Length: 123
Image (cartoon, rainbow, N blue to C red; front, side, top):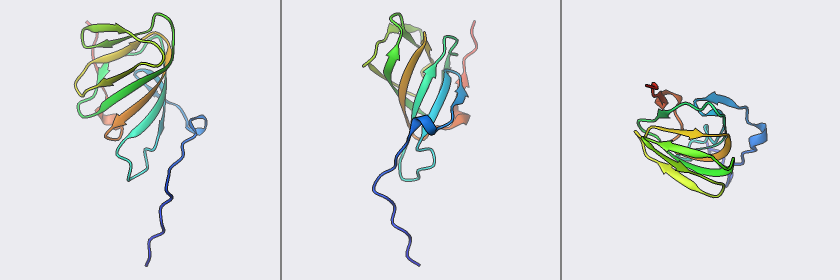
């Protein structure tokens, strides 16, 4: 039996992807079921009460689409200002959270795994 040919591309319309609550706010995750794509792409609306978390195996790359003037990212103990057009690659094991309301595009490699999302208890 001949296997049907895959299309040459995959299309994601984020307006049609349901939002999923996450430590950051609400994420819309694309390409989760595409076997031959090694990652996932998320559009995440960051809320003001984003929780510090980390991933043991995932690398996340944030691209800031929209954010308030005083938006920041906490990466371990460092807090850095961010603005639209900036990007941050976050390695596994890095404690991180967004500070302030923002909208980000996130490339996750390998594919996002909800079991690899570890909250950091605040002290």
